[in-house]
Length: 426
Image (tube, rainbow, N blue to C red; front, side, top):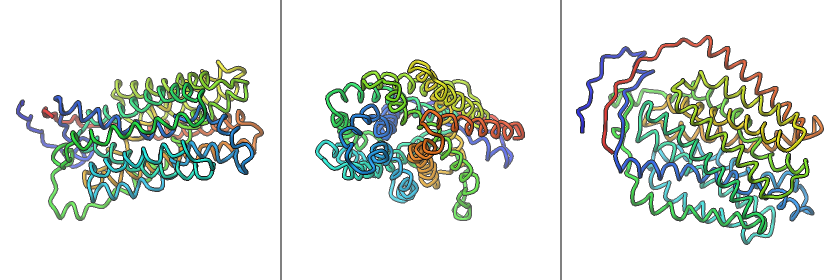
């Protein structure tokens, strides 16, 4: 193993902005990374797998009171549970450990994820979906926190972007899978939730317990310094508030795509799944663009929100399914840049001892936005007359956010200190 490079002296300001980076490599690292990426995909499976069968599910429960709200909520209520419980999961992560909670939560995820296969009440199905969100809160918080524990600096940024890419690639596959399996009935896609049973033993066997020194990117501190250091509530609050709004823009097209296509006469679940998969593939392209360019999250956010706004505008004005899908692709390209930008920005504000709580707060904020998106669209549709018109309102709000973020980025003081790099075999 090469000897570590001695770090140059840094000012106190530089220390805050440019922690030392340790490059982790080796076969153990690759297996570890594969398991973390797989864990991050499970909440995405919960978010998109049943999207192509929502119209069939709606038809099956057409006589149930409140079906117009309950069926979309079956897709997104896991996000409410995740949003409410992820901060508490973060506290548990910091106190009891990441690995143990991840193992238990993957088993619970399979139990409740497959429950709609034998439940006949729409209310009971929605309740089981809420419990899926409890497991997702722990899975997402643990997986993201472990990336922050194991890796540092630009390598951590790349792997947080890779988390988005893997989740988006899996979303593309899940859209296609959900549409294809959905032809056998709206219940069939729920079998896919059992896949998490394969992950639990692998995590138990191959993920090491993280230690602060494994990916220590913080400046060494005494015990009194750690005790006196406050949790970064103020900077994290701003990032989390922006994340709620960003998640609303990120998920709306994905949640509403099947309904928008259905309104245009496209009823085949396979076609809906392919259209949704094509747009979700743009998320991968956006995350890859973020990872490859090396630009800061703050500099990317105006462009990301702007692309989302343009995508909404195209969807709003679309006269046929092809144009609508093109608008969804543009929107999802912006979302693919937005998600790793927001996540990287949040993680950069956290020390090891705070990382579980901070990651839980960010995760909760993101999935709160996901839960709110169908309710916001429902309210906007009631106000402006159609789902398509509600996309126009979201286009305007995304454009305003893009301009505001662009002005803030222009005023922000530039200047980052290069981080010393150490090579570590993992």
